[in-house]
Image 1: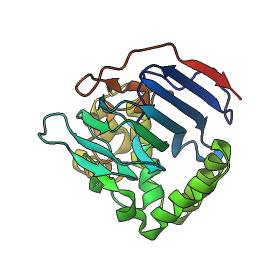
Image 2 (image 1 turned 180 degrees about the horizontal axis):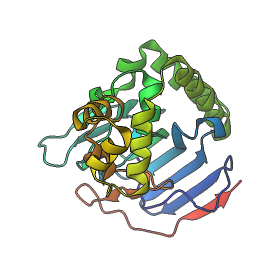
Image 3 (image 1 turned 180 degrees about the vertical axis):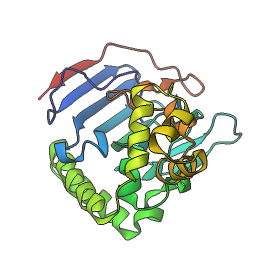
Image 4 (image 1 turned 120 degrees about the vertical axis):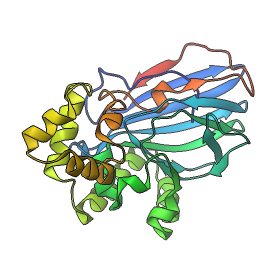
Length: 266
């Protein structure tokens, strides 16, 4: 995943592509952003295509309220927990569920791929499985999609430019969302209320308004969001934040000088 501490630009209208570029003696990277199609925006926050060519890098990725899908178009990366020993597991395309711990990623200097930030409820519907099976885990995409995972990477690699890739993802994700049942209305409502109050609303208040038991709500949350309600709410990002935007480069492998990024909007 590219170095940097960028945020998805707040002044870019829906459907507009925004590009951030960086060049220095240490190498170069480029990130191309676009929000999902309007009919998907309850399920998918944004896409980010990235290309990086530089020195080997280790980075800490902060917890995020998104379920992150990576479709790799280049070399693998290594991932491990902050407290875990060893080099970590190598992954190409994968899905990372909600996690309230820091993850360490490492790569050998070259990256190329697409990051898709899904809402937890969007991921529940797109993948058609309990989010508890993804929570605090990194799962190879082929384990979720089978041979479709490889075909998706090939189609994205063959597409001409980022806009064509994002349009392909719009179509693929819309089809998957249509195939599976949506999140329960009570979970969707409670998730929205937790987000609106930054997690401050008591669980008892939620269950009282929903007229359900705490056990019922907790069970539904684990199935459809992945974590317990309060723990999940602490991860809920603002609409413009992404896992990539809050990554923190470290100097364990190499020190990367920082230079101003150049941005363009098309």
